[in-house]
Length: 212
Length: 186
Image 1 (cartoon, chains in turn purple, green):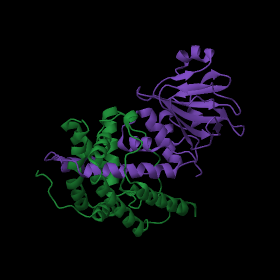
Image 2 (cartoon, rainbow over the protein chains, first blue to last red):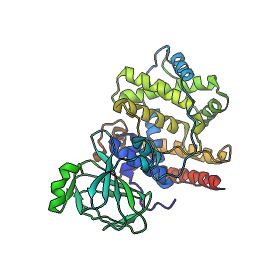
Image 3 (cartoon, rainbow over the protein chains, first blue to last red):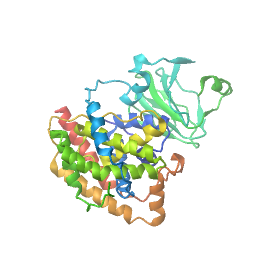
Image 4 (cartoon, chains in turn yellow, purple):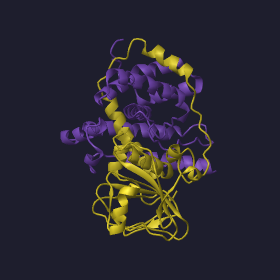
């Protein structure tokens, strides 16, 4: 695993505490599937959560709670892990499409760029982006927070070069124009909690139609 | 049922109980885990804004998951309490969202039947130190951390700098993950 750009403390804590919008949760979960460094960061914040839970005031369970739990166990199945195939989409993303990239129903954005929106709750929006090798995404700024996780190929922008598993965290200060690397078509998962702000006139007119 | 008042146990005991649930489906060990953790999960849920009914339901469901996923517990990567916290947190979000929460891929077990006992021990010690460090945080910072975990802060309000000393525990977990990858690729 050679992931270079991992999530920050804010996101690690937010994910561990469980306060992120669903669209950000899926980006972080996919990122953790690809980076042990990121997983260790989140786990340390989960240890903090455990300390707080240990200190919580206890509430009595119902008198029949233990019997009822044993009963639920008898009616449930033990979770058996399946061997993981080497897929482009990590499991947390596959759950939204019912499989790997071959199951994704893309919508064209023009110029070979395609997207597929994940059906998450509406507090933030996550979408898969498909950018042909060497192609650029329209120059854009952000009103809120934008997370971009690379799943295939790579992209480069004003900040750095990002490969599989790398997460770029962009906020209001960053205006960037990501360009996909030449080695392969680039697939990324991007999530925002506010619509993007495109700098050209045409993309701005198209924005309401494409929900980007 | 009486309020849980037993003396605090060393963390190692809880890890062992989860492993006996895993290895021998030990209902006695499960009963002890239930008596300690279920009321705490319920308290955590209520503090996070759940109704008593929802909290009871989540606590029971979390304990079912503990039983069914005991084979995925790795004491060198998470203390028993940390592992149970993640289960409880997920049940909470599932209940609030009415949909399954995105979770990272489960890590498989390597060919080694057990992680290094020394690793598990070292992680337990780090977890205890962390608990102490949280207690010793200045009041204002401790409040921010608490509010974050009980859902009183939005993700945009989360502080970048919490003052939590997480460097060592993170390195411990990172080391355990590296060992796991090594055994998997051997």
